[in-house]
Image 1 (cartoon, rainbow, N blue to C red):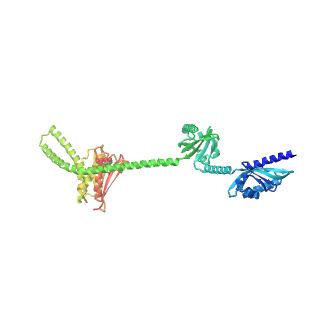
Image 2: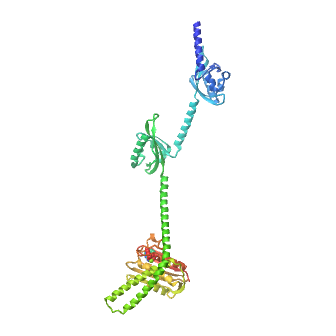
Image 3: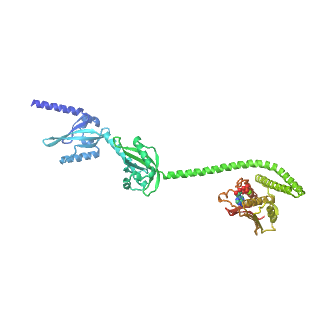
Amino acid sequence: MQQIEDELEKSSEKYQYLIKYAPTGIYEVDAHNRFRSVNEVMCKALGYSEKELLSMAPSSLLYPESRKRFQQRTHDILAGKAVDESVEYHVKTKNGSGLWVVMKVKFIQKNGVIDGALVIVHDVTERKRSERALLSAERKYRRLFETTQDGIMARNLEGRMINCNPAYAKMLGYTRKEIKSLSVRQLIPEKWHNQRDRVVKKVIETGHSVLFEREYRRKDGSVFPASVRTWRLTDGKGKAIGIWSIVREISLQKQQQKSLEEHAGVLEQIVQDREKRLKDNERLVAIGQTAGMVGHDLRNPLQALTGELYLAKTELASFPQGEGRSNLEESIHVIEEQILYMDKIVSDLQAFVQPIHIDKKPVGLQELLSAVIQTVTIPQNVTIKLENSGRSLQIRVDPHLIKRVLINLVTNAVQAMPSGGRLYVLAKVDSHGHVSISVEDTGVGIPDRLKSQIFTPLFTTKPRGQGFGLAVCKRVIEAHGGTICFESSEGKGTRFTLDFPAA
Ligand SMILES: Nc1ncnc2c1ncn2[C@@H]1O[C@H](COP(=O)(O)OP(=O)(O)O)[C@@H](O)[C@H]1O
Ligand SMILES: [Mg+2]
């Protein structure tokens, strides 16, 4: 008997020892749910001394929600219901911070009734915290997955869909259910299949892709560009089981990029035009500077030439008729024409660069028009019609300058009819005294694209043109307070009209 008692004592000692030093919290309660014993780990974790704890009711250590569960559980036990062996509670510590614990409860029976319980307590606060963090992170990711505008999708190694978010399905015009049964090849135009194979291979090898672009095909057949980034999908052990991608539609960006490029193109064109105009201006200034000089210097020898030529012509008249004389006459005629041409260039230049002084005088319309027609050499294949409704009328203009304008217009008209045509010069005066003079031809016409440029100085389409004629006309007419305008249709002819206000 003594031996049994000794044994018991020994085992009880061992048992007490274990409880005291075990690295987990252990306590015992009696049938009335009062602490019978608590171990050191328990005291430390809760921040109370052993004495303090033994004077407290275990349930008073629980947070309200846990206390409720505790009461329910006690109720169940008393009612003889089966309960889980382990239970999780939120426990208050002395300093107010809480602990999450899992308790394993072993009921102690005595004579068939519950006499108390031995409870082992595990602190699971850390695990609980990281579980919570995980849960909230997962919730965040899920929300992102569901709501982001970017398409997200995962596929297995065979290209079968594992999952995709609503944005991905919407972007492609399918429901999520429809799209799950489609292979990736059905969603991208064939010309991108090779690229996809390459990307997948690379992603499986290296883990991810760079940002790249490809096209997708919607359910309705329309194709759109997208930027894509892809990652390797692994099972828990790092084995590749597929890929997942983020797909962003970039139609708008592409469009914007295109219109930006177009815009840049237009800007470039404007800059080029400006540059050209600046260059033209520089040219004009340079021309202006030299024109005065050259004009002045050429004027005199030209006059001398004209004089000499006149003498030569008179002299020639006394030569006997014959081949020699008519050859000479022919030469003199050519020289005369060329001198006239040189004179015209010089006058245009000067008219353009010099400030215009207008010296208005009364001029008879009829005389003015006939003088013009006589000055310009009209080829045989051009018929000319002169109509003047204000035959006897006098207009107040600068006769030299207006003559120059009309000569320019008639010259242009003749030049526009290299294979002949009709030239029609019409002068009209209305009852208010407005004078309008038009010069019309049946020549080549002015192409629409050139219409805005013809009054620009230096603009010419002729191999030997100066491009000053119309610029001078405009300057002169505007200096008179009048206007110059034109109508032209390509291949049919052109009409320039001068309008002068009533004198
Ligand atoms: N009657 C016309 N018919 C067709 N084109 C014309 C006519 N008049 C002017 N143009 C066009 O306008 C350009 C400018 O004329 P202008 O200023 O007189 O310079 P230029 O005669 O030296 O070329 C001409 O090169 C030609 O292309
Ligand atoms: Mg001209």
